[in-house]
Amino acid sequence: MYTKFDVLETIDMVAKEHLDIRTITMGISLFPCVRGSAEETARAVYDLVCSRAENIVGTAEALSGEYGIPIVNKRVSVTPVSLISSAFPEKAPLIAKALDRAAEELGIDFLGGYSALVHKSSAGYEKIFMDTIPEVLAETKRLCSSVNVGSTRSGINMDAVGRMGHIFKRAAALTADADGLGAAKLVAFCNAVEDNPFMAGAFHGVGEADCVVNVGVSGPGVVKHALEQIPDADLTEAAEMIKRTAFKITRAGQLIAREAAKRLHAEFGIVDLSLAPTPARGDSVAQILEELGVGVVGGHGTTAALALLNDAVKKGGVMASSRVGGLSGAFIPVSEDIGMIEAAEAGEINLDKLEAMTCVCSVGLDMIAIPGDTPAETVSAILADEAAIGMVNNKTTAVRIIPAPGKKAGDKVVFGGLLGHAPVLPVHTADCSKFVLRGGNIPAPIHSFKN
Image 1 (tube, rainbow, N blue to C red):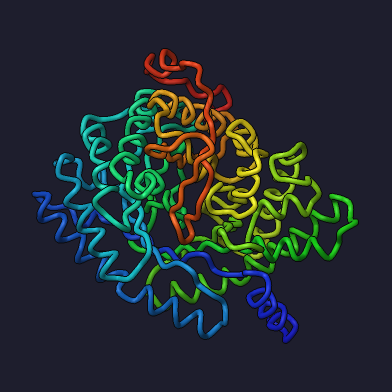
Image 2 (cartoon, rainbow, N blue to C red; image 1 turned 135 degrees about the vertical axis):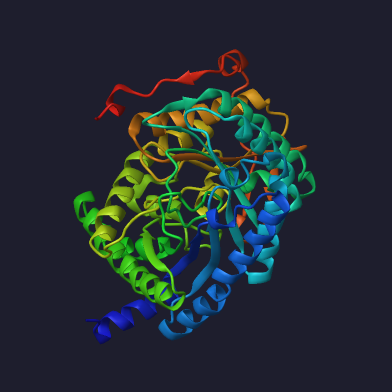
């Protein structure tokens, strides 16, 4: 039962503290679309996506109007396309273009699922598919891609990691006129999840129903405002305040998710509890950490403060929803968070500190620009480091990194909108190519053997 005080509190959160539903994402299985040729499959994919998701934008706008909560993004995720195109992987771009046309027809902002799952090894068709990713990302507007290169159960596929360094470089080079935007639509995962509603890493897992609705909530500004009310509290009390605030945020997401699923004739999937920032001031995860007292994000104490925040968000959100999933935590994308942008510009944030922070938060090295002349093997080594954190700690980690063409450390990349802008961060210059070129697999940790 909602009281008038709940209603007034929610209105205040929306009006003053940037509360929103960050995304409604419809997951659609493409397995019924497989035909005897790529051309027939592409046509079936376009027809199915347009049919299933034809009302997603209208439904989101109606719910936003009725409940007074902004719903920022309307998205679709699909079965990993490498599986759908396995009989004709060299023609997978036909399916990509069909998906991009469907996204344009539907009026959604992003469609995720041009993806491959190669965490243990790469089949021949998957290698061919992965090589199509850079051109596809350069030639489409709304399509996003992801590759799962490792897991706690299987270890890390270093052959795939080595290939991904070149894929990131080429995706950026082919979109040099947009500061390497193609690479910003590509994610390399360890322990990828099947029900993630956030881009660019969303795909519809093979264990999911035919059609589901997953919702991602957000509210960094709400959490920061709550902490501002207790400036002298100890960290135990601060954690309790974050938990109570996360409960309120998630409760709004649960309401929207159930109603959206009902109206769209889909199953209710999950609510993702992630605090997802934007470049807008007052909507920053980094500024929450600074409110806790670290001075400037990136300074000493930042990792501990982020661990407190991430844990409290999860504990509060789990109590508010019966179906929590996705990534659920706090995102720290450099270009998409005004606090992270300013810390990077001031030299307080570097790749090493970001890597440490990802040990305790959601995802990993996210929306980071590096010099365009960074060797592909160095990019791969960065991916390997992050995948190792995910593998050993049994958590999802990811890398969305942009080797910005023609840019050097200290320069700036500008993507606009929610993708924001960021300074180009330096990388270590020691030659790590021998390590990457060894290939093979990094074995799974001993605690992965649980049977």
